[in-house]
Image (cartoon, rainbow, N blue to C red; front, side, top):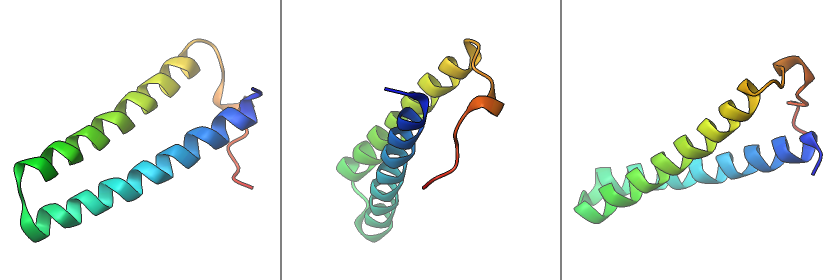
Length: 72
């Protein structure tokens, strides 16, 4: 997979997870509950893990200037 595909997949997955996170926050406001809190934390930590992997990859020598960050 070339870098532009990797960036695209990362951003698409991040968008999806942010939508799920927003839904869980709305559910938490509406009805609360331990299950909703657990689901919210699962999504938050999933986003965190993916982002940490991305940052680790960047720190391994790839410069930000060489990343194709524009969405098409």
